[in-house]
Structures are given as C-alpha cells and as structure tokens.
Image (tube, rainbow, N blue to C red):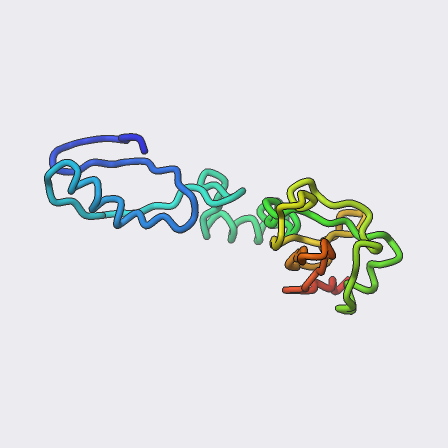
Length: 161
C-alpha cells in the first residue's frame, strides 16, 4: 500500500494485492487504525494478470481502428490472454484427441511447464497447446494419490479455420 495523494479529508492510496482482497474493507480497516471513519469513494483497477490499464483502448480508438482497417493491433489472442496459465504441449499426433474432447494422458504430452510438474501440484487450471503454439483447450490438471495425472477439460477450443 502506498499513499498516492492526500488533501484533507480525502486520501488516494495505491494497493497491490492478490485476488480475494476486499478493498472496501481495507479502507474501513485503515480508518479504524487511524481512529477515524473511512470509506471508499472511488475504486479503479489498474492491473489484473497480464492486463494493464495503460494498454487499454477506448471505444473511440477501437471504432477508428476498425474503420481504418487496423483493428488487429488491438486484439489479444486467447493464448496470450491466458499467458498466466501454465501450458501443457501436446504431441502432434494427439491434437485430434483434444479437439474431439477425447481424454489424454501423459503419453500424449510432449512438455509441461515447471509450474505443474512439481509433485506438490495436485490440481491446477492449465492451457493445452499444440506444438505450433495453438491454444487447444483449458483444463484442470489433476494429480491423484497414485501420481497419475488426469486432464479434465473445462473448454475445448476448436478454430473455425
């Protein structure tokens, strides 16, 4: 928490926090610690995962980009948007299994991010990608007590191309 500005009776604070933090409660708690009443007047999320407000486009900018044929520069791929998720890369011959919703096993996997290969990872949301980097699915990576791994699909993404 850092103080952005202060002009009695208003203070602006900047908070870097994890998901699940209740900023309105935080404002109240700060007031209690200071011995005053406090409440939230305004809340602006400036960052979430890979997304940052500084990179955002206004509706007018998007409209102008669409009319000018440059809308592609404003679009983030699903794979990039899910960049914070660890990835499992599927062997070339196993892509059709994923695209058709057929269960896969570790034998179908070429590589997995370190974030999910640790023994302590028992369940984790992941993305499944092809060797070419195409996003194929979002799944739960589940390691059971026998050290077997199950990939439970949340969404299978089939491209229209």
